[in-house]
View 1 (spheres, rainbow, N blue to C red):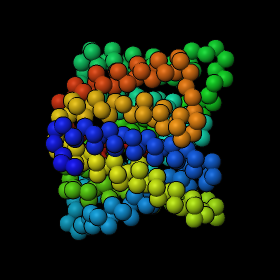
View 2: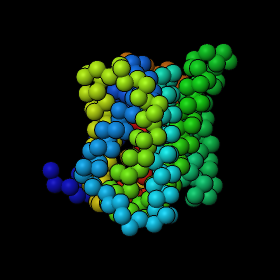
View 3: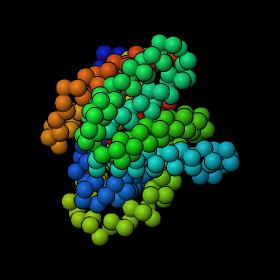
View 4: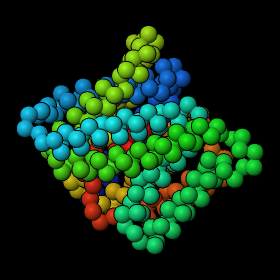
Length: 291
C-alpha cells in the first residue's frame, strides 16, 4: 500500500486498534500471572525486538542523555505496571478512559487556553460517569482499580515529557530501545516471581501483546506521522477510549452502561478538541499509549 495523506490515517487507526486489542489480550493474561508478570513479558519481548532492530549505541552518551533515558524507562515501567494492575479491577474501556486524563491534562496545561481547560473539565465529568462516581453506592468498581488507572494516566503524562526529551538526545529508536532495557530491568525482580506459571501458551500470549501493544503500533505511527498533521493525528489518537471499549466488548465480553458510554463520549470529544489543537509536534514514541 502506498502511504500518503489519504492512507496515513488508516495506519494510525490500525495502530490504535492494535494497542487496545493488545490491552484486551493483556487483561486475559493478568489473572494468570499477575500484573507485574504480564508487564515483564511484554517489556522483555518489546525490548528484544527493538534492540535487535535499532542496535542502540552505548558509547559517547552524555550524563544528561543517560539520566533522561533512565527516567524514561522508569516512567515506562510504572505506567505499564499501573495500567495492567487496573485491568484486574476495571473493564478496559473504563481503565483507558480514566488513564487518558493524564495526557489530556498535560496538553491543556501546556496550551494554557481557557477552551482546553474547559475541555478537561468536561472530560473529568465524563470520567465520573464512566467510573461510576455518580452512583451513590460506589459499588460498581473497586476504588483500587480507579486509583491504578489514575496513576497510569499520571505516568503516561510523565512518559510523554520524558519521551520528548529522549527524542532530542537520541536518534531513531535508540532512546526507546534503551529505555525498554531500563524498564525491563526494573520490573524483572518482581515479575520473575511468576515465572513458574509461564507455560508456552502464556509466553506466546506475551509475545503477541508485545507486538500488538508496542512494536506494531509504533511502526505504523512512525510511518503515518511523516504524512499527517499533528491536528489529524490528535483527533485519531482521541479515539483510543472508544476503541478500548470495543476491544473489551469483543474480546472480554465487557459491556458498558449507557451513562458510561456517555462519559466515554465526553472524554473522546474533549480529547479531540485539546489534542487536535496542539501545534508542537511530539516524537512518535511519545504518542504510543500503555495499552
